[in-house]
Image 1 (cartoon, rainbow, N blue to C red):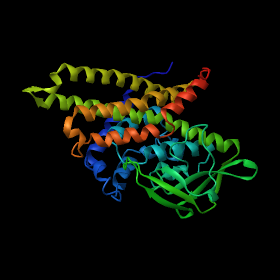
Image 2: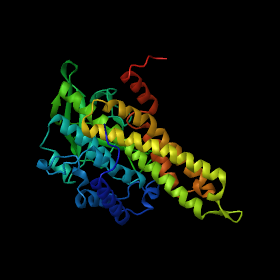
Image 3: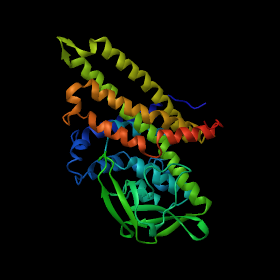
Image 4: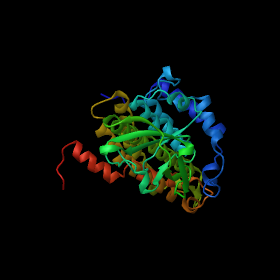
Length: 359
């Protein structure tokens, strides 16, 4: 049975990530990115990648990484999600890295592990395991692609001769990038046009499996990011309810507010269980990992949005303004709801996985 509890190592990692974020992340940065999308955020990624080694968390020690598992990566994403940190951990250190690991490519992983380079999987951000189409460079740009604007390495699954998939690695000079104005500017999106040939990493079944593994890992660990968003929303709203006074009483003393926060807490408990189970089964290679991933994305996506919406409403009028940081979490929750497959798509996948008949 997958253990849902956090280990001492995971809690220590959480403390380190949280401390670094407090020191290196300006709390106003996520808000400013909407008006100043060209703001340099590389310093934050360097702090996390070089000082904590997060870029190589999933990379084996023999290749310069930390040799950790999805459990540790999940804890990192909880903290990054709560802070809506504008860093490419999910897109590069999880999704692209998993694709390279699954394909057995050891030449490019050391530079990713050191944080010297970042990578992006060139597929629409809505793609999910088993539901993606190989890129046809002649058909126009791929959009929207997450993590591409700051990437140095691009992993592009293309369709080769005979319809066989070829997973290719391209450099920055072999693609053209066009920024897209997205709802959540802390995770910028882009249109990617493939202009070069690159070099082949894997082909055929191996390429398909590498892409599927990357998307599956992304979906499993995205749930932990959504958990982090929901946890921040609950914690922040509870503190606000303690200090906001109306009718000479803190609003947290009103029964209607108590009930809404209690309901949100209960939903958060379920969110944590689903996210931890998805990360645990992924780390253990459990045969039920696809089921747990579908459950996690079906549940956590909606739960994060609800937490952000409740936080915004319970902050009252200030919650509707950019002076409050709640809106950045709502934007991340809404954009995550569409990422790597919508909840409805994952519910459909879950029905197939557990042999439920179609309605």
